Length: 377
Ligand SMILES: C[S@@+](CC[C@H](N)C(=O)[O-])C[C@H]1O[C@@H](n2cnc3c(N)ncnc32)[C@H](O)[C@@H]1O
Image (cartoon, rainbow, N blue to C red; front, top):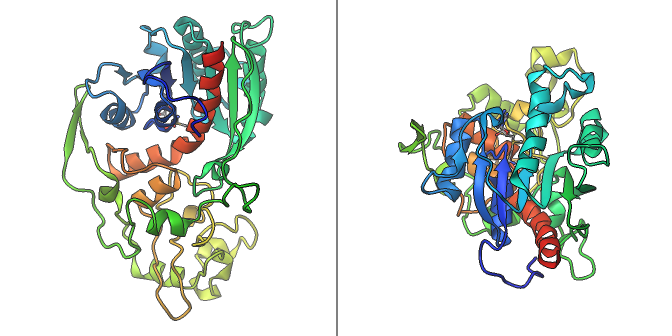
């Protein structure tokens, strides 16, 4: 990145709606944008946002977007609404609360006077009726008729993130088209581009070394006052290097699973009773990651091995085995966060923030083309 000449900080401004812990904002700030607003209904996530980007707590609205009225003037509205939030839109029920979520996103874009918006969602979003509604809003007869939209399908691994995570990014603009972000990394090295970042590079060669052997199960004792609440935190990245308690039977199960393997590799007697009836289905369940690849897509329950391919990659037959799921610190690194980001909330709340986030390097790649467009507009 960095083909935009270095400019005074906060040359352009963002308002982050459905802000979560601020993964999108982190990427935009790294590209020289300034954050002037955020809307987030979850108190712990809003506290994380404020602890990172709003030290005075003056521009983080910790509440429902429906109640967010003082919309600031900004250059770009950025937002990744909860993917399940739009699932009822296809039914066209205007009274449905989730339908309102959609309307408020459009309202905020309009009220902010933004030149551009960036909308992030899951890969399959581009195949939903909700996606068509967003396009329709930005068509001639729509509420965002001044905007034209472009859709990009981007993989975080292509931007240096140690994770294969494909996302739909919609850029809306009333100041002209952007160019598609150009990958900085590739599955195989080519044309001066290095190969995808691996877990080994991310955990053992990064700025913070994340030792595989972890015994600590609890976050340190610390509290943060935010918006009339007291929440745990703020925690630094090494504080998050804590494991879930895995009982002995679970650890014996995990010991049977080599990198790349999953629950189908368990001996019959160690299968969970409910699994014995299901001999097909998600092979990722109880899966072990590989050291020399990026991780699979991280979700909000990465600390539960039964929810996906989340077992630590260290496994040698008869040698050193690490029989636990990823720690919160490892998951944050897999999501492209570094030691600058601090975190607020309980373990479960922070896991949700991590799993929901847009990896900052991916956000930064989008911010770069947005900044280029705004600069020349
Ligand atoms: C997918 S996450 C956003 C992640 C964020 N873009 C990032 O990069 O870290 C969606 C967020 O929307 C929030 N949310 C859901 N409903 C909301 C509402 N009605 N008003 C404001 N925020 C809401 C959720 O709490 C969640 O943190």
